Image (tube, rainbow, N blue to C red; front, side, top):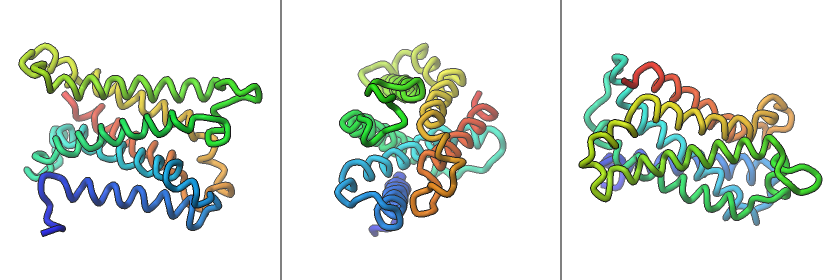
Length: 213
């Protein structure tokens, strides 16, 4: 059956559909972003949100169980597919963002001279470093690295995961904090995706901080 929950595929499908639909609703349908920006600019935002949600789910299920929350075997067994999908979405997000990284799309990232602002630099640095840590995490379970217990122990350690999530929070904070409090400027009156993403990050950060061993 199409709607049968199997190996996390339905979770991935629903998360992706809801994230992209929210982006389209906020920017194109209710907001004033032209439809020509749907295939790249708006889609990129939806992909970024779905990537973060999937990754936070992947990293938080174990810690949730450690602090006493009952997690079913289905969710625990779905972590691999959810995590891989989150990583692939993050990779797509990186390529799409770099392709349109200019003052027209990301005005707050640049100063009048056309160079990166401090805010833009900090956001990009946080995003790049968090992706590098995520990339290391992903490849370490492949190419024979999983046979080395020292490597696996390091990348699954509390410090590694918590710092990686924290870098994502830095990326999100400097990307959109100024737009979170100016509610009257919200596209379509809906909360910015960066704000939703930051709240998702914060929940995941606290869960991993408290529950990860």
